[in-house]
Length: 326
Length: 279
Image (cartoon, rainbow over all chains, first blue to last red; front, side, top):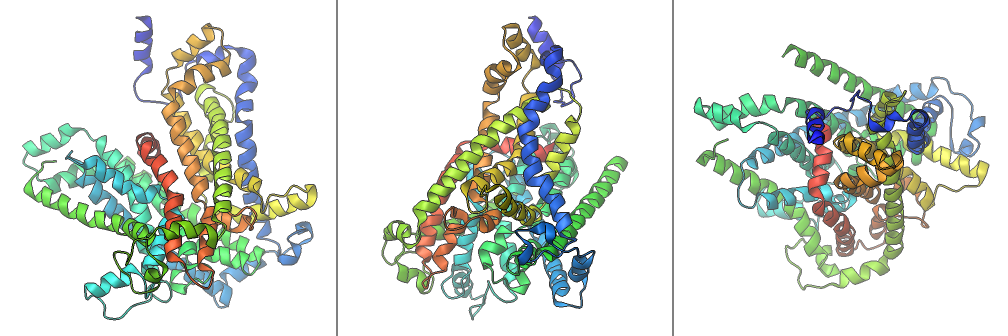
């Protein structure tokens, strides 16, 4: 009986910061060092694989690290801001390439995130009321997400082949094109990238939005129906505002993922990237590992990081302010 | 939402369009894996000229697929086991203890999740090369290097998700275990872990999927000796012929374990993944 009452008092919104002294903390000796011991393996690994490499990367961006110095990097001569100057000198080939790649990536990210969100929302709303076969459809829609990324992209690679692929076959059958366009080289590469990335990504938007929809109380819709609001009005006036917190995080996460997408261009194009499909991560990768010019590659990475941090910061500021006003 | 006629039409259209979008590639993958080579070298056909399982047999000979399979399995299983174990310990600390540095730890770990991989790739490669020079421990071109890297990739999300699961387990249960004479680790093993089993399963699947599907680091950190499937599957197209039927067969075979695992545990997994965005 007493257990039930204590349960009831601790229930409610799940909060990580439960300040009550938990049972494990009653033991003064343990309390001090045990949590650190428990964290130690995770901290060591995070330092080794994430934090230290990031600091090393910043350092590398300030030295002339070419193939000769890879094994004895302490001897690499300093470059000052040289690597950055090369990376953002838009009059020379390196800087121009980076700028173009940046532009391509912006377009790619905005379109892919937009499409993924629209498709995810459309499907989540369509599956909102229960119907026979809903679970089956949901499971089917999850498959592109569950598939290893390269397996799905390889299939698209095959489908996008000019002479043997399914895409041109379908387009010809529907009389949308009479010739057979190239998809993996030339100007169509961006469209190909967007299609494939959306195919993988929209499912995640769908999953998240569907979970969000489930948390909207049904009474809201019932009340709106009584007031005579149609489905579209209900979507605009109930679903969208209620999903706002979900959408804020979802769009940011989708953007960060898409902007640094490497798998799609790499598996789709290999190392011969068409300029129209030269996404920034892929561009930095090629700049570093094909030319072995690590210093410039590191400078580009740092610039990418700064850009993503600024975008995230502005995004959080703007959306945070609007939330407060609302 | 009312199921008006308009809504039913809308649902029909959405399901048809998205169903085709999702299904066509999967259909192409499956049927192409059952085609003879000449079918995938000529114009596309929806159905094999004659059904054959030869690609599923030949794919093992065209490239050393079995070796890639073994490499991927060892790497992914080891990364999963260590990652889950380390995440359990860290999540237990975050969920059950208040200590200095707790917030710093959680925010730092989570933010590393958001950074693009290419940022770490190049420095990590350099660090691995230099560790080899200094200490003779080879990490580039070995499974060990991949295991360490991949297990760290899945750590942030795993810790975060497990801490959430642990938080939902009443602390009174811990106390009961302590009263019964268990230490904190006993409480973790006997009370918290069994109650959090769905979370542990979801995290394990997530870790496995991360390691099994990783491409970027595998493309730099692997040589012929430790090549994993994610890079190995590309070898079919560097030959004089592109064996698309075998590529599709191999893609299908490497996908089956993860897809089945994912679909079996999808409820736990989906709850965990989406909880993050909803919170």
